[in-house]
Length: 359
Image: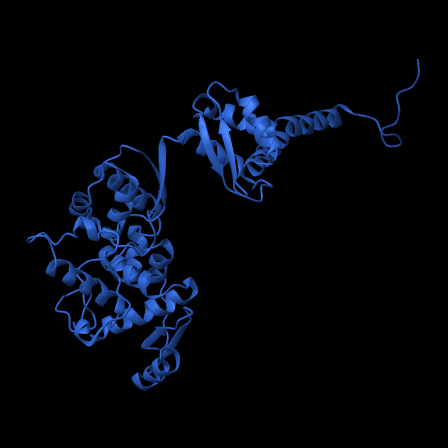
């Protein structure tokens, strides 16, 4: 009988090394490999496709997921027909694909396509922009959905000015005002839950309402996100020192209201149906009379904050108010290219006006 090999001289598996090898094998097979596969799968289905231009794509009634996947792959709309198949089936999306013709945008991922095909062509896409006031939300909803009444939408949503989240949504064609408003409100709460947590708010020394008012002004005043924290600091400083905030956007808001009520149907202050699409909610050419508009929203005339937000702010604007930056400046303006120019004194500010805003 041959003698056993000396483990000190030869590479042999001792009982202990066998156990270690077995444990490592199990870890690789049942932990490392599945985790790697999971992360790769999530990366792959989120990766933009190679599609470089908008492409029409038809899903016929009764078509199988495999047929749809192959057609998408041939059009370069997905990177892998196999992954598309797996993603739809593992998430249950394969059971609710809607027939119809879709416009697929360049770079759309598998995840995005799966959601798009769930909505189908019976749902309509609508985008509400940052910086819009409630009436502009109502106008856009009226343009897209036949059951939306402009006046009813404004009446129901006005109390939520500044709390309707600007984003892209999908609704049924027969949607009504309450559903849209509720969806926008819920989305606002979800998207701002962390940003407007009790802890975050308490650190600012402001109320939630005050934060939203400042953010709504900032959204209209400054287009570049990188400039917003400094401008937020200026607005806050002027307010705390009992100076007029002097934000043109608030005057524009007040002037629109004044014009609206002056020309309103009876006493309702609602835009006439024929004027909905041409009414100017943000008049860029403010006159001396406009600056004297007698409204508490007009911070060119009155000291203090407007009584409510003037628009729906983006996450960027809300974040800028919460994380405002102190500076030596008291004044700012945006030139025609959207560049912000700061000043410490009124003399410097007037010079900036002469330099950057003269015609």
